[in-house]
Length: 259
Image (cartoon, rainbow, N blue to C red; front, side, top):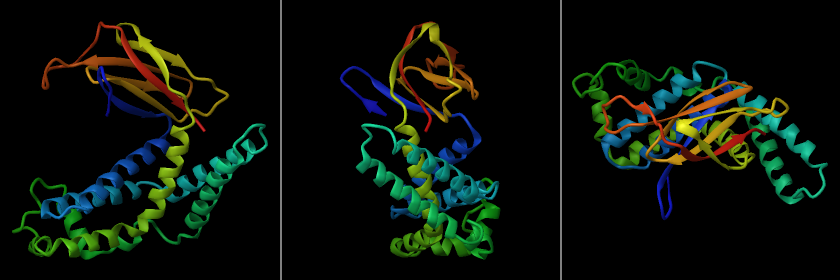
């Protein structure tokens, strides 16, 4: 959220392809894990472990390594093409290119499946099997887990860090890729008459992400494809009531990102 002298605004992001959708989900999960893994209470450790299980479930659905390698390689090719343009900041470009090449080499050298180190972990799998049951990780269900949560926070956090360590190269690669994509667009001030806005995307540019910054009184619902997207801004008088599309003209900032 961003606060200025007039109003509070919230940032929203809409992916335009499945690869970026997966990257954003992975980024959110790792950010959440990192927060809870630094805390000291058993409930924080529990939240971190449940988030780790979500990460495991996400990476089990597809080949994240190959998708990330493809995206990093695509971005490297684009960066190399930019090097021939006049007035380009060669120092900054070479720094980003060097970081991308390093990530690509490290990813390429990574052997086995991303979740292999936890795939057959009896302790983690016992929690994973019970996590989908409401209250299924209570002490009487998993006394071994309850015992572990009672250990000093230093020991619990060290174990969490060991579990997440093999994922760090992927987190770094996704973070670098998304940063480059986010920085590729320029924020424009837009007005949505009666809460509706639509735009056709330039087919010559591979747009991957739409970013929307809007006053907190509204939130957008986005319908997006490769060639066109539309936004409808809703307002909700009270939580629990059905939201409705606003009749007001909504001022917002729009960034179409594609690198």
